[in-house]
Image (cartoon, rainbow, N blue to C red):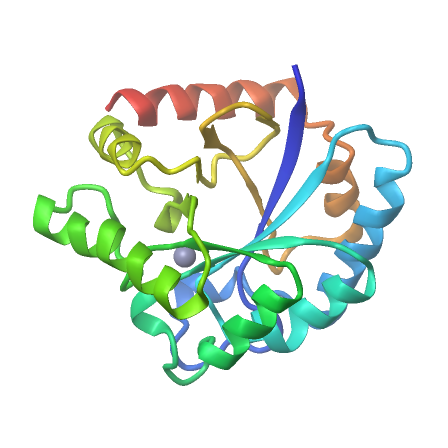
Length: 225
Ligand SMILES: [Zn+2]
């Protein structure tokens, strides 16, 4: 049974005005980002688990900073875009999205207005899931088959609804390795506190037994509530 390591990043550089204090911890410096990429390249030589980079929120730094650094190293990424932010200041616009697609990056959906999907009524979910996906497909000229859940917040009702939307894969923020064939995939979210030792620990997929247990309990709870 194959496994994969999925990293979740947000903005790179200084957080812009649209980033809340709570979210700014997920912004990392360009230096930290390139250190991460170098460690990915280095650890893949000995660790037999593929590493996938994902980027949430559709910040402009996806194209200005992440894209050239990934491209230079022959790495690929999946970019989860909020449909309602396309073209807004500090976020990806049509041209930047075209650059990502042209470079072979994959585009997924992160909804419309970066809302917590858990507990939304059907009409709001229609806008966040169906309408947002169609808008992203329209702007980017690609088929969107993947979704990333905002704030990693879900319950069994939301998962059932996401299944109905027929996404190929849905990404959470639950940490740890994903099974390659799984529909719901956990990701390790990098934040501004990560040192190189933290990157190595995640990239070599050696969490403590306690960390694994804690994660499995959390996933079980979220999927059942
Ligand atoms: Zn987000």
